[in-house]
Length: 510
Ligand SMILES: NC(=O)C1=CN([C@@H]2O[C@H](COP(=O)(O)OP(=O)(O)OC[C@H]3O[C@@H](n4cnc5c(N)ncnc54)[C@H](OP(=O)(O)O)[C@@H]3O)[C@@H](O)[C@H]2O)C=CC1
Ligand SMILES: O=C1O[C@H](COP(=O)(O)O)[C@@H](O)[C@H](O)[C@H]1O
Image (cartoon, rainbow, N blue to C red; front, side, top):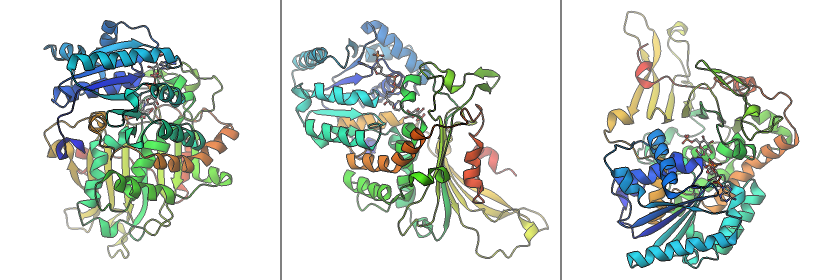
């Protein structure tokens, strides 16, 4: 959003990353800042300080981050001195967020930079830590004079925001007591993905989809966010989270909002957020006694993927050997408003699934009258719009076509828009877009407090029910599968099936 529209040169900025020694910083945040710097989008004067309890020297910390650049960044270290120059802006501060005295060093870092630069700097506090640490950090930050400067200081809070509705409400209350709402950036990195932002362009910059984008023409919507990795080293975090909190409460509900929202009248931050809030408010709350009908949970066992034996979730580091935390979740939602009444939205997400794919499918209804001979085609459900968010980045419109030949034989074909074929330039990563937005003070693609709370209201009954009714059949899916059988049944009993897509280039040759 920020890049072309209203990019302006940023003022001197001091960045602190709480959780600097953690996975997110190594995997996404530092690579994003590095790419912004390579693209000339970082401020002229800036510093980045990572924090954590791990005992790093500045040098070791930079080495750790360089590994992340080489493994995860869209641009690796080209060994031309760029990384060294960028890394000279990075330092490490060993601190425990629970110790108020450790925050004094932060005040010192800010004032040292301001003295060296001769200006009052902007400060970005990025909280890349588990939600239970956020209240402590926010309370301690509030004692720093600079953090209270609403024109200069911003606080980015990672998802999940809170642990449930109650804690999210408490956290919102705490943060808005301590800081001005304009300083608080609740991040959901899916909102920074190019392909996600493009949903707004697809829907609201084209007139052709709107007339059919409703219950009269759409049979159902599917959202799949599948990963081929397990929880890796994040067992400690995941044990307090699970798939529903980690992915559905935030990323998946935000995707659902993008598909289901009404047209905004402007691109003002609050206008977009209001339209999304309307969707979240209209999602039917699942009654506790109906959770089993609407939601399915799963946990991966040990098993083989690509010739390699993988551990079951219960054997992962930091995980309780009897854990009932779900690594897979599928839910059927309904949105009770005029546009979507009666249209099911099936969503699913999980670790160690068969494919890495984030895919939104809009399945249109059957043709009202099929004049072709029945043998012409096996399917009447041929009209489908597939929005591939990642790793394929394309949009496909599936429709029936006549096969060449003397018989009337039909088969579905795709009209494809592919990012790679249409644009040469590499796409920025989500965190690049969002970090730039946060530095610029553009909150459009961040969550407002009320949105987060309503999303918890949607999820809480499922969480409560699952927590109070431990699963009897865990583990219940093998790595490399599409999750538990019950997830297939959730959709199959309504005469539908989960849709996955082959790479676009292979699909049309049939
Ligand atoms: N990893 C990812 O791909 C993504 C993560 N997120 C979110 O980011 C957040 C962090 O996740 P992730 O990086 O994976 O988690 P990690 O467990 O890898 O990192 C947690 C960080 O918190 C720090 N920390 C924990 N306790 C303290 C303490 N008492 N004092 C100081 N620092 C502390 C750790 O530092 P140390 O151990 O050195 O003390 C570490 O740097 C989560 O909310 C997650 O949902 C969001 C999107 C993607
Ligand atoms: O927020 C999270 O997202 C990642 C998946 O992000 P993606 O951009 O690679 O799709 C997920 O692995 C992680 O568990 C979760 O915390």
